[in-house]
Each structure stands twice: as C-alpha cells, then as structure tokens.
Image 1 (cartoon, one colour):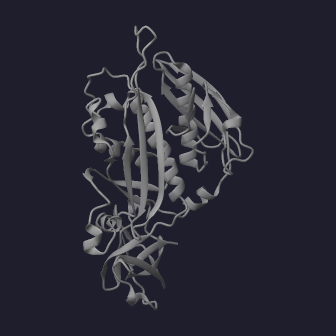
Image 2 (image 1 turned 30 degrees about the vertical axis):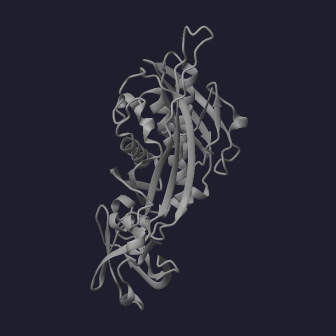
Length: 383
C-alpha cells in the first residue's frame, strides 16, 4: 500500500535541537485499516514540515504499508544527512496520531521567503473536458466545488500565494477577447482583479471503471473512479504560461450506483474518492509553491496623485509600513500579431510604504530623478 506525500498537518514545536523539527499528523481509521491511516498521518506530518518550514520534499516519496522506507525518500538539499524518525503513535476514538522528528537545515527556498511577499492567484471555475462523466454520481457543480477546495488548500498551505477565488466564474482561454483588445486574456483578467497570476484547472478524466465480478458473478468489487487534472499557471503581466503540471490518481467510488452525491458537501469530500482528490490537490499546492517561492512578486502602480502612489500589494500580501519598493517603468509594445508585450526599464526610483490596507499600499514619491516619469501600471518590487 503506497501513497504520495501531499497533505497538511499541525506543527508541534520548534526544533528539538539544532537541525531538528517535530511535526504531528493524524488520520481517521476507516474500516479498521490502521496501515492506511498511518500512511496518511505520516504524509500529513512530512508535508507540513515541507510547506511550513522550507523543507523541500519530492512529490515521489513513498510510504509503504505504514512504514517509513528511507531508500524511497528523496528529500532535497534542505535536509542535512536526511533522517526521519517516528517519535510516538497513538489511537483514540478511531483517530490515529503520529509524531515525527525530522532532521533539516535552511535551504534556498527559506531564504527566498525571508524578504518576500505573497502573490495573489486568480482562481476561476475549473474546466471539464468531458461533462458527460458527471452523470455518474450526478456531480452537478463539481467544477465550482473543485476550485473551492483548491483555493482553500492554497490559502491554508501555501507560503508563496493566496487566492482570489472566483469559483462560479467560468473562463475559456480560447475566447476572442485577445483579438479585440490586443491583450492576452490572462493579462486582462489579472489586471481587473489585481492578481499576479491566473491558475486554470482543467479536469481531463472523471471516468468510472466498471466493477469486477467474480468468476461465478456472485460478488463485485467497488468500482474505481479516475481523477486526472491539468493545472496551468499564467503570469499576470506577460500573460505567458509559466508552469503546468498533470496529475492523475484513482480511488474507490463507494457510493450506491444510482446515488446523487452533491460535490459541495462534506459527504463527497470525506469519502475515499474525495479524500484522494484532496490529496492530489494538496500535492499540487506544494508544486505551485516550489514554482513561485523564489520568483519576485511584481506589484503595479494602480493610482497616482501628484507625489503619492498606490500599489496593488497590501497587508494580505505581507506588506508592512516601512517596506521599501523599487519602481520599474513598464512599456507596452506590439508584436507582429498586434499583441501587447511588456518591456521593463529601471527607473532608479525607490519608495517607502507608509500606509497599508488589506489589498493595497501607499507611498510618497520623492524628488529623485525619474520620479516624474512613474505612471500607472509601472512595476513595484520589494527590496
């Protein structure tokens, strides 16, 4: 029995000694399957250490039959002499809790976060390649429910980003909007929502495998359901796709044949299949974090009044009064297809934030050379 490390857990304490951290994970025991619960609890603890302390864990580590198989773990350079130890395990009211001790040291990802801000990711309704697959289980509203779950996981786990969730708004990147405005759709959308990125989930497969009968046809196995999804991340200024990844898993669909399963309710997400989907999404959040963690967040000047500017980065992004930002002039040029492309020019102008709201910040412009040339949509990068 194997799983991929991908869930969220609760930190117990700061390092027990130099280079050590402790983390706790827990999982419900379903149908008496203790090894499976142990695997999930271990996954939670290791994933929390990965997301919250900068430990980088490859998405291919495995835990076999509830045992840590160290030769299958490939923890990156964030671990010094990789070592993971089980401190304790307990079971109470069918809830298995496990405590781990993990040897670690700081890594480049942690250093990237020391002086960084979080990016806002616009997350619309998920797209679905084959809508007829929703009929099995009558999963009406699955696209919105999936985006909602993904947004909650990003907001809960990510060190690099949070979401502007628009789970009821469906997008189609093949729209002709770019042809009429000259802007790519991701750029147009992120500008109108003050987001730094657009994340587009596309579900490629929700098919159900037929249940297997015994030789005499006297019993059947619970059918398996596939879940395949592509996640594509677009930059809000350039409109370019900067990251894309496919994910696939399958799990038992343990609902009656004719049952209607509301995908927005806990009945779905607490099922075997729902929990597996959340595991996959949690794994994706870690990959998105790895893609963004060392990327500078590009804010923009969204208003100017004489010698004062407002940028679209605020308290939720991690901006505080006293933070210093470098301003970079942005110029839009058109390519041979009449699409806008952004060029950046160093302005040699820096500002110090003196007022912060939830989603924006204000700073006075000094009389430094180049300050008069600062315009709307110019870039702001934290120093």
